[in-house]
Image (cartoon, rainbow, N blue to C red):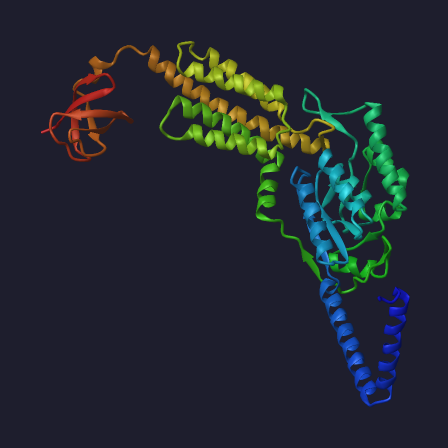
Length: 460
């Protein structure tokens, strides 16, 4: 008959006590305690070594935002923070030198700063750098804000280009109030001057490093990153105490895909790729066989990827219509009318594609004018080249027949004619067919013309 559960438990406890008495009555307790202490000491040493190795020796992970804020920028910052968290770095250093950029990407960067448990130090560097518009929002949202001497922050008033090339402030109260409320809240959260923060937006206030510290918009002025880390040593940020005096600064290297996206997403490069792609398609379809149309499609696709596919559809439609008109001109007899209309469409479309519209893009007026020039000038240059090509085509079409005038003229063989090949006649390349084999560089005389092929014979 089975004993009750509690009775069995009592029996086990009784045997355990008997075994314990025998253990303590012999010499074995001393050996057991010694082994236990050695095991405890070894485990502690392993944990200490692992913790010190995982702490990345107290390093700080830095990343540069030294170009416009683009669709690649927020991915790079997110990847940096992820690397810092997994590598047990003690802080992230954002080195800013930017004219501003995409507002959506800026908000994403700010969200990444606020979500991470690591202290994020915003630092406008090097000497002469600026952090305008969207860059000012990022600096105001950083846990620690610092600037190098002779750097500038501000110019955060939303503006747009006027038809005359000047800049006009955006007076939409809903837009302005939203930006002002956000930057004031970020400044208040970090104990900074919220009035100065609002003036960055309301009156396009600009401050150098000394004035920014004087008015409480930032906390530190430092000539280099190592000096900055020395200054913030011991600071309490996000429930952590920074121990950064003499800490190593390691720079985050984005993976190859993000580096490529960063290159493509530069607004100037992306815009130029779109223009080059469209003109490549034009010349490729008008002169097949050189692969220009394939290059054009690739350039156009890369440009759209760089823009994050966030393009003005009306502008893109106008550019495509312009391409179509130019292609029709090259195969018609309108003598430049369609080409002129197509060029106008492409130019207007390129203007509409300039990435300066707020709130998608948040950059000062000076940079917007630079972008406009970068988009419009290539269109005008390529348009001039196209006009010259149309002129040459029209001149050929309007010229009287020349067959009678070229018979008896001399040409030079560009390659061995056996019997077909190419000759040079009045600076132009012509297909030719000889009566007998003609060696390269030999002179030939034109005997006739069959379509686009010259009939020649070697000069004796």
